[in-house]
Image 1 (tube, helix red, strand yellow):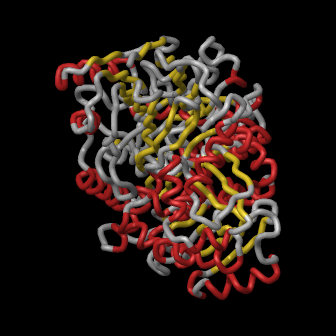
Image 2 (cartoon, helix red, strand yellow):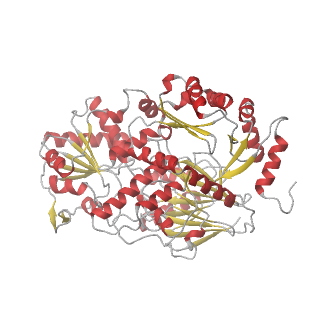
Image 3 (cartoon, one colour):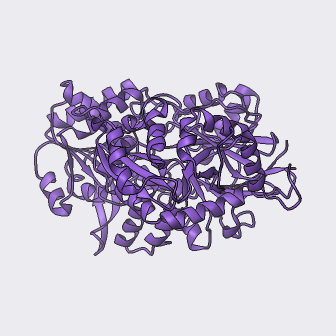
Length: 639
């Protein structure tokens, strides 16, 4: 029973103690972000009671972690050998670290499933034997400096991070002071345009920012963070990131520059990818002589404040809002974000960027929710004629174009996003060469593609089953095929490749807005035998869109020294069907099969005609209220 001066954590502790079997005691209860952490002097006894933690979590409706109170576990020296004895040698342990402050032992392994055991049996045995709480990580099958750096940084900052998580937990689980009488969505960007995705979801109690990206090819066009809805930035309760692409994530570190000190909720894979892309964003800005909007220290601060959320986990992010992520099928770790607001008051789904059908990399987007009254829906390919070629036809056309270019003695250049499209293309090309549909020639990866690919292999749980199994079986990882070669010799290596034999070049940036693709335009663009193949979306205002539309005289900066015109004479083709976005049919299918179907939809993340036509189509086809908002508008959602 609560008293006037009791806190939520006091009430939870009392409820836990009422539910505990006789003889079990707890010494401290605290929140770390959305998770409840219970310290006990009896960690072994807790571990022996199979199913107890699940029953307690179900009773109080919180995720629970049990940790030993100080002195309740075996010494690290004694525990190390005993832990190693309990784990099969085939698990491939690569790191074993003990953290006395929290009573945790970090176990990094090539095969984490063998560390966990059937239904978590080995983890329980470890806790029973030594008292330490095990935390398990996968050793990436491909070496990734990003994954290593992020993990090492978070380990170094473990104490500061724990303080931040406890502070965040107190804020999430504070007493609610306002009734949930309304919900509002304010558009800070991404309306009637592609880029600078950013929205505020607010209630009388809470303000949450969803995404904070830049606009490709439009320097200076940033989200309207100065609106009263977004300011002051430091008073935001939470930031939710749907995926790592820069048009959704590029400006998140800017929030920390201006005082934000709260959590960023995203998937673990998105956390690592956003760090990679944001640091590259700073590097490209510096190389092009632009002043970056923030520095790398803000990226590190953002990473320290990230709270990973797994698909399907219902997570408290404020006293009146619960967040659940679902697979969006767009890129690694991309999520559809479902917000449950109040005590059943309103449910909002932000689609982020979605791909409805299965691809070689991912399962299609999830659209099954407990409740969903309002949908904020991407409309990148929402135009009435935006139908992509199906995947098999797209792959066949790509292979034909490459073979034709080879026959002419030319080279193929494919601008590709480092995350998503590049890995999809790598799978297509590796299979085509393995099956003899293409001659086996070098496939050069320029930019961050190889590093992004390594991150994919670090999180195989986000990939389709068949691909995941190939990655985890030694000798079968398609991304390690010998024809994939990293361009790591700078301009000298590019010059050598340009003067060499037939090859395929996958290069960033995907929209030809800078980066190594500019060097390939200069070196290969003047030869009619070569071919440039677009496989991804080219936003309005980007050089990629201009070239795709027929422009052949393009402005070109000679590596920063002088500006001139470059004449392109190579062939230019577009192969649809490789985009990470659903086409018009896929968008309609997502809404048409959505369970439950929303009462209203806001069509965003598309140019004006695409958003307008999708909005009209959804209304006519399904009879739901639809809107095509402008930036800076606010919509009130009632219960």
